[in-house]
Image 1 (cartoon, rainbow, N blue to C red):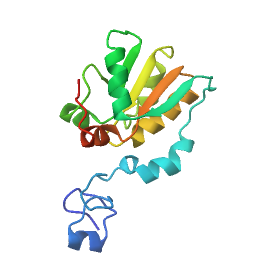
Image 2: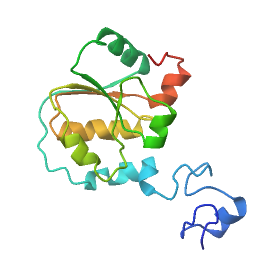
Image 3: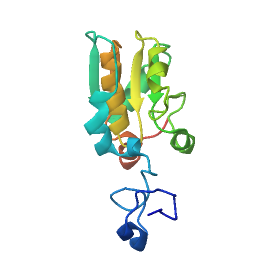
Length: 166
């Protein structure tokens, strides 16, 4: 059955009658018929993404938005610090840290784009809720990046804790 709101061919009669969204648990349509948007799907399938790189020793750490803000303030002039935003372009346009670099996690070229980055720089990886950034950090670890930090809870936690975005 086709979902009238998105054209999805896998919608059920129940989702049609309740007008729930595309496979999202809250019915809000957050997954937009894209299983790559579903954190559960990502967790179950990330190991199948071909990496092909040997991991090297380095620093890989989860940090809070407060720790991230402090690190950004302390290293504001450091050219080796890169804020890597792995949200979609629309999410990025809606909200992003100053001077952050967009690298859409769902882009088919994501792995190739990561490969082009300087592995010796320091990366702070952020997304909307901290799920994609965690997977990106783990991927970067496997690719041999030297120092990568994941912002726990992403933008959502950042705003909940009312930390300035500068």
